[in-house]
Amino acid sequence: AQSVTQPDIHITVSEGASLELRCNYSYGATPYLFWYVQSPGQGLQLLLKYFSGDTLVQGIKGFEAEFKRSQSSFNLRKPSVHWSDAAEYFCAVGATNAGKSTFGDGTTLTVKP
Amino acid sequence: DTAVSQTPKYLVTQMGNDKSIKCEQNLGHDTMYWYKQDSKKFLKIMFSYNNKELIINETVPNRFSPKSPDKAHLNLHINSLELGDSAVYFCASSQEGGSEAFFGQGTRLTVV
Image (tube, rainbow over all chains, first blue to last red; front, side, top):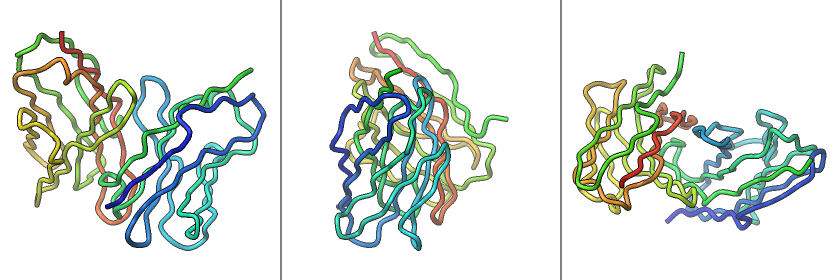
């Protein structure tokens, strides 16, 4: 069975600092991986996705993620966080179709001024 | 134009009532979903549906039922509402074959 673990429930960073959100997955085949962001009171928006090819994936809003098969990880990174990045971040894994994937429990990002 | 729209945005109702949440997508996608997000923000899929199959998460009570009048709509009917049904419900859609899911803004359901 597929599963996703986001080990950090809550992360606080200062504006301008770098960010890394962790995601570990369990999947029986080559996974399809996604990162979504949910701003307060909003739905989820796709930041980036990995299907195959280059293991370093670029997304919107300056985010990137790196697929590491040996570590079963797909960590999300941003070199310099902006106050508007404060949100809930979800990693998802599994089916070719993102809607059918399994979502992690989310990481809440707080940005300090 | 909103890609995936849900109505209402907020819904407050009493225990035991029956209610519906509507969802429409104008993206031409062939698959639609309903998710439940609880107070801890955990996101769980309830249903996935296209014109060929309905997949139900086995943990979903049969008081919940999706109804699809056409490819662009997937409504959620809930019978005999319970306090534990209070949550934010998200509709989403996607195209088969490795594409992202587009989410609606959510419906915050409060059962009192």
